[in-house]
Amino acid sequence: PIEKELPLLNKKYQGNEIALGVFEEFRNEINFYNKYSEFYGYEFFVMQKNN
Image (cartoon, rainbow, N blue to C red):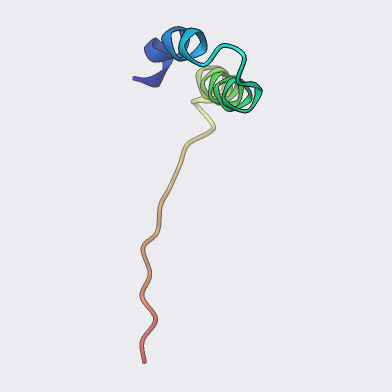
């Protein structure tokens, strides 16, 4: 999981503020899911337009 990779990615991209910001958002999303997983989740829908 990405959660285990984040420390390595932070080290690899140290000084790259854009990458570090993305990783911070990953951490926020993980924390949010862990805190509210009883009420929170994802659904994906695949749709196709009929002609």
